[in-house]
Each structure stands twice: as C-alpha cells, then as structure tokens.
Length: 640
Image (cartoon, rainbow, N blue to C red; front, side):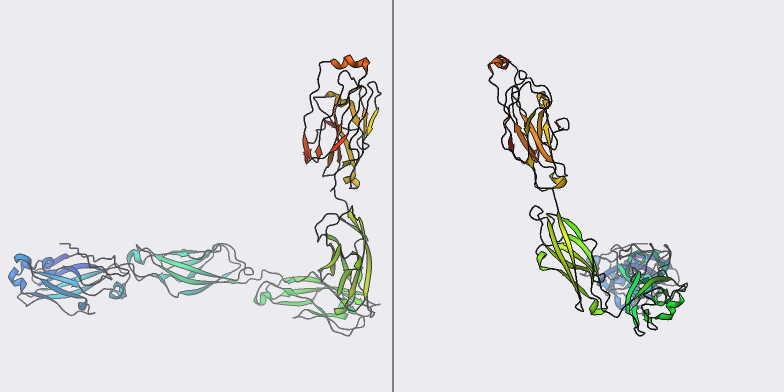
C-alpha cells in the first residue's frame, strides 16, 4: 500500500484554497483474474488539470512489463455509466535519463460531489469507479478499477423547505408549549452537513429547540397577549459545522389566535342625554362598547339589563347590534323628569362576558334655556409673582339645550382682560378655566373684580361676578425706619429701662409681614446679655444691672426678620459713647479691654459691632444690608 499526495493548481474562486487530496492505495491483486484495484481521493470543486497519481507506479506495472515494454503501453478507460471518463485522462511522461515511464492520472474537469453522489449525498463515502485496461493487450489482459473518492467541501448552505412557514399559538398556551417547524437540509456531508438552529430575530416570547437534525420546534418562552401583539415575524437560522460555516434562514410567521379573555368595555361608564318632552319616538343616544377579542369573541350585542323596571321598557328600547337607545313613545316631563336604566354589552364568546353602563335621560321643557355658570366660589385667590398661565379658578357651564344651542363660549368683560383670560379646558364637560396672563403684584393691586360672560349657540347669555384676591408672597425684606440712633444709659438705671424703640417695616402682609426682633448674644461679650428686645415690638430694654467700670462701651446687634418660610432680616448697630464724668475717670483706667466682635454672615442678615458705654452713653443705630448673614443660634439671640 502506498500513499501519494499532489497539490493542484489553485483557481481564484471560493475554493481557491482547496487542494486535491490524493491517496493512492494498491488494494489487492487477485491471482488468475488479471484484475487490480486502486483508490484515490480528490476534493470536489478542484480545478483541472491536476495530478491525481502515477498509475504505473501505484499499480507496480514493472512487475509485469519491462521498462522498454511499459513505455510502449498505454492505459485506457472503458466506458462507465454515468460516464465521468471525460473528467480524467492519462498522461504518459517519459522517464528522465533512462528512468521509468510515468502513466499519470490527471483530473481535467471539476467534480461536484453533490452531483456525483446526488442519490447518496449524505453518505459517508462518495466515489467514482473507473474501469481501465493496459493496451496493447497481452496475455493475460490486465484490467483494473480505479476508485476516485470525491471528498466534500463546505460549498452548500443549509436550505429550509419551504423557506417560509406559518405557525399558530393561542394566547392561552402555557410557557413551554412548542410547535414543529420545517428543518433544514445541507447537501454536504459529514460535519459540513450537520446544522445548529437558532432564532435570528431577538424575541422574549420564543426560542428554537431541536431534538435532532430533523425535529425542530418553536417554543413559547413567555405568555402571549393577542390584544397587545397579534402576530410576530421571525427568522430562524440553520448554520452548518464547516470550517467556514454557512447559514440558511427560514422566514417564520407566528399568528396568535384569540381566546375570549376580554370583557366588553363601554367608552364611558355612564351616558347622559336630554330629550324635549313630548318628542316623537326617535334615537336619543348610542352606547358603544369594544371588545379586545376578535371574531365572535369580539362581537358585541346590546340589551337592557334584566332587572330594568317595566316603566323603562315602556319608553325605551336598545338596538341589538348598534346600541342605539331610542324612545318608543313621547315622555311627559311632569310625569317623568329623569329616566335612568342600565344597558348590558354581551360578547359572542362561550361562555359570554358582559359589561354594564348606566344611561340617564333628562326630559327638558320646550322652553329654551340660557347657560348656567357654576362657580365653585364667588371669591378666590391667587398668589402674586406666579408665572402667566397659572390656574385661578375652574368652573363648569351647564346648558339644557341640545346641538348648537347647547354649545357655549365664555370670556371676561373688558375690565380684567389684561390680567386674566378664560380658556376652554374640556368641551364635553363644558369645563373652563380662568388663567393669569401676567405676573401679579399684590403690593400694586390686591383685589380684582371680574365678570364672566358665557353665550350659547342660540344667543342666550349669562353673567357671573367673581372677586379675585392676590395672595401675598414673602417677596420683601424688613427695613429699619431708623438709619442712625444714639442713646445714653445711666449706670444705675432700673431694670426694664427703655433704651430705644426700634421700628422695621415689611411690604408683605400677614405672616409674611410679621416682624420679629432679636439681639445677637456674643459669648465673648457677656454684657450683651444685659439687654433684651421685645419680639414684635422692637423695644430695647435693660434686663440686668449695668457696671460701667466693667465695660464702658458695647455694640449690640439687632435682627429684624419675618416668621415666614423665607426669612428676611436687617442688622441694627447700636453704639454708645464714653462718659466724661470726672468722678468716675479713674474707673476708666482699668487695664481690661474689649475685643472687637467677629463679623458673621447669613443670607438676608448682616451684623456689625458697637461699643456703648454704661454710664452716660449714646447708642448709634445704623441700618445696613448685605447679601448674606449667618443666623444666630437660639442661645445667641433672644427676645421677650
């Protein structure tokens, strides 16, 4: 047995990297029969000419012929069926320098394995059997068979048959339910013919499973709802296991079939209509319900509820198919002013599902009616500084007329149009809103009197007055009236002695304008605890005995702020001048000194230093404004 491998000439095609695999096997020599067998292997789609093998050498013909005699022989093919002889020829190549003549078997045409073995494309072996003889004949005649094994290359993609398919799932199917789908076939062999299936379209509802190469299923991965998605378009891929994998696709349409899982739903819970008394029988209104199901499951019919009173049947009937509520006879308003009943919607499923809606018919007089403006209140308020378009009040308008006579338009009288406007919010409900057209300033104007005028399509008009109060926002900071204040305080003054009456103003009102006064306490200067200020009065008084010899000057800080959420404040600086009484001059020579008060900051407040003397002293009150000040802690500010 001998193996020989020759590389074919490449071609610039998909298979330009494929070669010719040649394996020469001298299989057997059966004595007395004169017949020899030999086998070669060649890759399909190999371009010719390509050397397959040396017949003379592989068959060892030198055992039967001398070198000179072998050079006179030739190998010829006998006709085979089907005839593939034209794909091969034998080329005689003289030996070099007296060497042995070669009888080379050549491939001259490409072979397609799927055509050569089309009846057994999936078989593990595919070969051609060529019958050959050595001529001229001798005794015994040498006949032999050459088997050409055609090896597979991955030149075929998996193919679904059919390439399009439709499967159905019911929306009631459980997760894990599966439906068979077509499998793919690959004309190649071996690993090139094996395929793996996958879902090429991303989906949370489905996956592809396979029990074998030919048993493929689409499996439900999550529940379906036909009313949400009625169908899906998916692509299923089949990929072979070739070195360069090829893929085929199946276009799969998934139809979700309906189950009667939806109730009929009316477009409103209740229906209202007005009929003029003594009207002739006619349709009054139409109730309408929809059902998310399809077919008979979604077909809705209407009927009066089974517990409807007999007097309703006397006057009203409901269309079975269209839901039209009609009068059967005229109604006398003095006998029956309001007629209320229930209509039932029933679908065609089994068992059927039902829903109920209420219908109310109001019987009107023959006289025309003006619009009725229904205000929730005659007085309302809106905060100042709000953006234009702020809702001030919502109101409804009722009109007992029908059609164009019942359509209503509303506007404000001329006086308040610059600050306010009326817009329709919901036409069906006849709901209107009064909106601001600009920012309001309460300090400029705090009250508006407006008149709402509504006109229906029949020319009837109604008016209603409304008072709008502009509510206060805390948009002002307190301001001290005094800019500078000087005071003298006797050393031996009584407790409660009034030093000054401070006054601050705030443009806001109520809580936003309620001013509180505080003295900031400095732990480094304990004499600040000798004074108090009334919280809302601003009266600065002496709360402890004064000792000028301990401290001759002192600076007090008074904060004026509001109690609203947004606190504003101002600083008040009090300073006292030193007394020049000769009887106490020696007391001022003490070595004790007063350190300056460290400035602290807080938004809306500012603080400064003052040093009032205790005997005969003058307080300087100075008002200043800063961008930010630090709020004193509860231990640092007090008021009585």
